[in-house]
Image 1 (tube, rainbow, N blue to C red):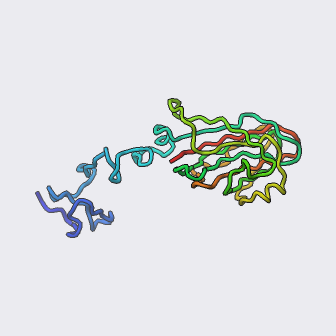
Image 2: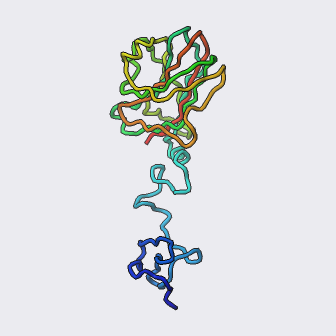
Image 3: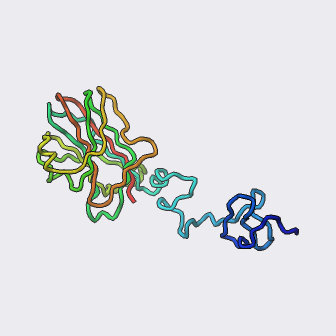
Length: 226
């Protein structure tokens, strides 16, 4: 069998990749021929990156959300339709408690408000329940997106059924990082396509709803845990 031309003599072992410039190849050491479309590089599809395929080490053709769903690590939670007070603030949080052993990846946040108003997202370092004056905790209804999984999420997902004030929020702390607007009874996706928010242990995300009058509102979170 003829020796291929333009072979880099240093690239004669499996595992050395070429630059696709015509000067380097990935060479089959048994035949001396370069791997190409007709002679593909053999791959053990049962293992990738030295580990068995799983939701945290998926096949590269599979996106993380679908892989996490199959592994039972994909969650949604909603407040349902709520009614707020007149002129103060309401909120919904997703918080990753210390010791959870997981990272939260929030890829979806869908607020609904029956009022045209501006609202904020705040990065927080403490659970609003018990730490934000005026907050009366109400658990959100959560569900695993693999309907065969009955376990509860590790994340704390809740809203407040009472109002808190701007002064309460200042004392509570945190950092606002995004401002959104709502129109009457139109739910919006606040996390743009392809974006996610990574929440390690002891940190969370607070949606702060600003109302000018008593109105219906709600929130839905979508996230992965691993």
